Length: 264
Image (tube, rainbow, N blue to C red; front, side):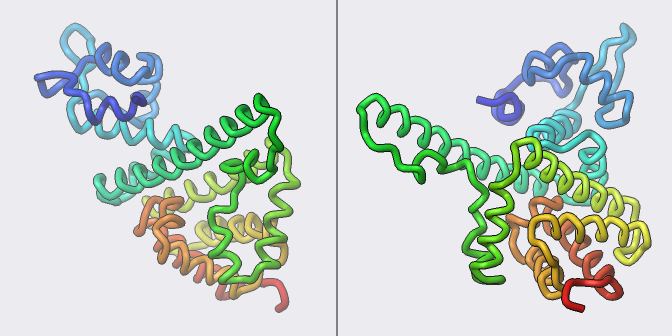
């Protein structure tokens, strides 16, 4: 059971507050980390006792759980702060996190099965199939959607590009997406209009990021993705759920009004 699951399922106290010691024991988070979260305004204790001890109430625990979930998904502290500042309902946000965790669990289960199959076949002297060895290690989960929307050639080109990258390059590409998503979230939390120049700058980076994998990005492709972010909850999850995805879609539409695309 993960530390984040423990905070949901284990009755940790009969009181309405938990000490920092209890929190660190339950979650594996250090007291130094909790103090740092307090210093940067990410997680403040519900109160500090006369003896200087920090105490956390139920709302604090819920916030900490969301922080830990977002950290496990690879988001930086700045991005997490922006997500937590957004107006998304907490239960809806947790459902989004839960779906992402299910997806990650499924991917890990496939990797485990893949490695187990390789071990069994190696021990038994059997022929190893490449498809079995790499199941769960690719990014083909949206293969059918991409092929249906933009054709097999578009998917094949993107897939070949992705497989040509080194592991550090793949991580850097994914980190750029997280940073873009975080900047969108911050802009929305600050109440900026999707057509604001600051938001347009984020969409321009988004446009360039898409071009790295898809090559030439047409206006139709760009706007089609914008709509898909809202229509498909799996994509919406990357932008904080339906509300965040709607802001991103509107920002992309505003940017597309006067941006230059391939073939124009």
